[in-house]
Amino acid sequence: MQKLAIQGGARLNGEVRISGAKNAALPIMCASLLSADDVRLSNLPDMHDVATMAKLLQQMGVSVALSPQAATFNAGHVDKLEAPYDMVKTMRAAILVLGPLLTRFGEARVSLPGGCAIGSRPVDLHIKGLQAMGAEIHIEHGYIHATAKRLRGARILFDLVSVTGTENLMMAAVLADGVTTLENAAREPEVVDLANCLIAMGAKIDGAGSDTITIRGVDSLHGAHHRVMPDRIESGTFLVAAAATGGRITLSEARADILDSVLDKLREAGARIDVSGSHITLEMLRRPAAVNLRTAPYPAFPTDMQAQFMALNTIAEGSAMVVETIFENRFMHVQELRRLGAQIDVEGNTAIIKGCAQLEGATIMATDLRASACLVIAGLVAQGETIVDRIYHLDRGYEHIEAKLSALGAQIRRI
Ligand code: EPZ
Image (cartoon, rainbow, N blue to C red):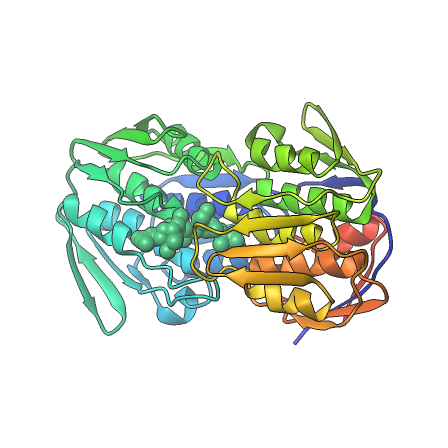
């Protein structure tokens, strides 16, 4: 099991390039199943989940030509319409092959994704939407078995906002017969990036980025080249790390226009932030002020930034309240932060953090992707050495994070 050893105390300084967004790359890779032509993706991040998704597509018969930060996919000879349990259990996003397989080939067998550390993560809204479009769906032996001669357009109202639910049904709708409207759809920028790629492939989509998306089915899609958008959560993670260590960093190839809620909170914590084009500079000249947070669907404060901000609050001036409204168990990082001396009380989906002047290094354990980022940030500010165990969680969703942090002056090494 690989670990990270972090010597706390260094202020982060310098410039870091932001990678392509994991949560845009994963659905967009699945979109390659919708065409028999080449789909070429650039700015593809080099991380474990992207490699897993490439393997999943390859075992279906998709040809994948990988090159540094780019790949060409061709689904002209798909011969297996299945996503097996052993691949789905490590990456829930594999559910995103369901819509494309069903709408292009009329059949799909996808393992039910298990739960994960942050919650049960059901996919009932994905299934309900496909049934509304005429799919026959049976759940047997832990697999979703879906068939449909041809999906037909439908009006689908989401009980609650689901990012991959919106993405799966948007992909199912692009080759369906007729018009589909997705209401109470997710507005996340990654949904918009997927829609832009699908439109480049010939899909007819209006309203992506709003809560109502209209898709007019076409008979087939052609190939395209798409550059994956920058990762807003990686951006936020580095900005919080710089704020926590009292440093000054510049992000390059980033997008500030999709980070408003995060930048607002960082300014509230006392950071000075300047934006020019694709560069975001943050400078923190004082101890952070504690900031209250309440996670909610985009454009409100992202749940994927909740753990990172909690690390900032542990050493901030004052007390803060953090309310997690999206997932039922996304406070796994709390007990690990307590091992570093953080003062946190949890009541249901609310955590109260009382800022303390100093954390003490210790051995701690990552439990999920964003919790591990939180623990790395805490290690950067704790006194002495912090060992973060089970960092495979980190490698799933961050590209070369310790190399990037070292380049910013962090004392961090993989052991
Ligand atoms: C996406 O997960 C992201 N993953 C998550 O990022 C992110 O935390 C989440 O959206 C919320 O923004 C990818 O895009 C690959 P949801 P997703 O469906 O789509 C409930 C990371 O760290 N729900 O928007 O799985 C669900 O239980 C990951 O990069 C149902 O009840 O999340 C949750 O409470 C973690 N039934 C809420 O909706 C369904 O059918 C939001 O889930 C679907 C979802």
